[in-house]
Length: 282
Ligand SMILES: C[S@@+](CC[C@H](N)C(=O)[O-])C[C@H]1O[C@@H](n2cnc3c(N)ncnc32)[C@H](O)[C@@H]1O
Image (cartoon, rainbow, N blue to C red):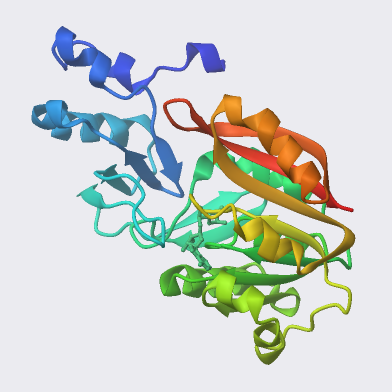
């Protein structure tokens, strides 16, 4: 069956949900491991059970269904969910050859970014030192370590940190990853704290930084840059409208970076997209 032939959830609910409400049924939903994750609009409250039954019938091994009831919230960037089916939302998710244990009710994870993460990991070279602040459960960390880099990962959410440590073990990458729980802004402005945690910072700075920046933390680029060596690389994620991009390229040039590549990696709000910039520090 080709992608075009695939039956969407909305198609599958035709004849079950009354016609005027059908456009409100999401066309698709995500899987994190064997947990299906959907956002059911309030107007479809009366159809929740039938939507859940349909989702469970669409893929045989679905163990739980989560309904996302809020946007990402707070410093940890975690949404609120209702468990509509199943006993637990803890799962093992496979991405780009690595296994991640997590419960997305406690940690941030977006399965749609798998291609972008593979793209960035493909740039990492064996023996590099790589800094990854805002590391989450490790989707940039494990593939970088798997390429033979020495990775320093910083994450503030204790639940995400615990998952990240377990995921490093699960994928047998213990020798190559140092996980530090704490505020990346504080830690990078006090480089001694990296050494105190057992990470040997290269004398001239990291070879590479991968920065999945949360909203409103663009100022963090300066902090990261101070920890990256001259001619080192920074993969910087930021949320912007199309009209802001040209100005941003100029701004990065003025900050002493060469923009080697940039691309949009998904919409996050009307008119606003997540962008990645591959920067070379001059
Ligand atoms: C957008 S998520 C990205 C997570 C992960 N890199 C991924 O792609 O799945 C941002 C992460 O940064 C963490 N975070 C937010 N503020 C932080 C801070 N000041 N220091 C360290 N981590 C922080 C959040 O807990 C969250 O896990």
